[in-house]
Length: 85
Image 1 (tube, one colour):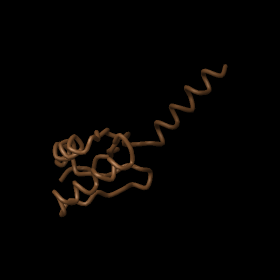
Image 2: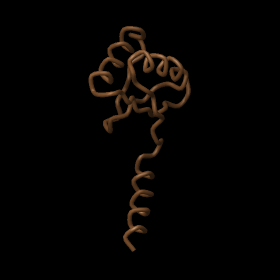
Image 3: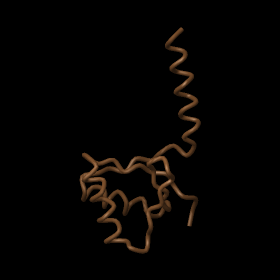
Image 4: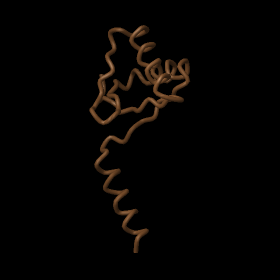
């Protein structure tokens, strides 16, 4: 297994996002979706195709999240400051 990948499951709404989790658990009970506490999931890279397939079945999409969310916040803060000058 490779290094876990951070993903976000985006659905039409919370109902469909929950439907994704229910369908995932039904199809892959041995593959646990681990949350990172920031609203993202950590999955094995090998699961990505299956994750995208289940997402399509439940009107969701899988978006790869930044590996380092702090870096994105830092860059956003720089861009925000630049626009205020």
